[in-house]
Image (tube, rainbow, N blue to C red; front, side, top):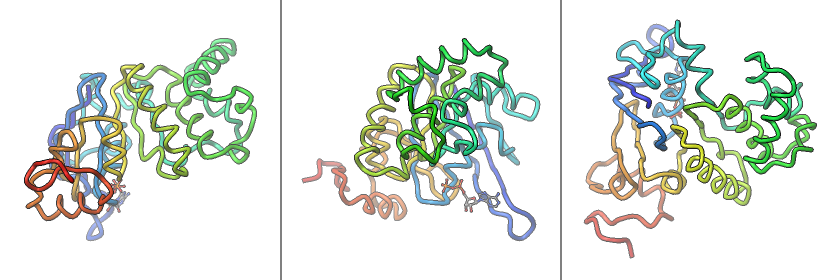
Length: 256
Ligand code: ADP
């Protein structure tokens, strides 16, 4: 379970400092998937970075499965949390396999344990194991993201944080990975927070969507609830920017 309790974060120095999160209360029950949506700059990545302990709140607190995230527990929280970013964040001088293996190697696993886990994970993410001998530059965007996912899952994390993991992929690859991720979320039972700026993608992954605006939680629930009551200017503009979606009308009835 993840809890953000009235979390405020200010980043930058002096007069240039920005209030990035402003009294954010957010809970994700164990094994559930939450999609964080909102316009660029609303604080989505900062929520993930705060859960990971990369950013320390000025006010409020963050707990992961009951453990308070603070400098003393950061390493433990990171071990229990898989993190995937938009372009995979693979090290270019390591092969795909070496990248995926890193958490196991760092945890002191012996070679055969690492290799067994790599084999199981490549099957799980539907990646040809031969691909693991290539360097990131020799891989497609989809292959890089599958390897980033393997790395995130290496230590069987309790929590998986994904920061626009599919944002840089072409639509065909993106669709394949959307299907893969959704089935993984269901099979693994991990607590997941996935960031996307796309309401349709959020709706595909989960019926629990949090809409953020200027560091605050503006809406929470399934798409139908997030998108209703469009008398709120921000919600209305954000929902209408997804004109291709079949959304409830302002009156709550089905879109025609
Ligand atoms: P999102 O993921 O929704 O696009 P972010 O969480 O990345 O938003 O950023 C939220 C806001 O915080 C943005 O305005 C961004 O410019 C600002 N910000 C992020 N990191 C820093 C930093 N280190 N110093 C100052 N401002 C920052």
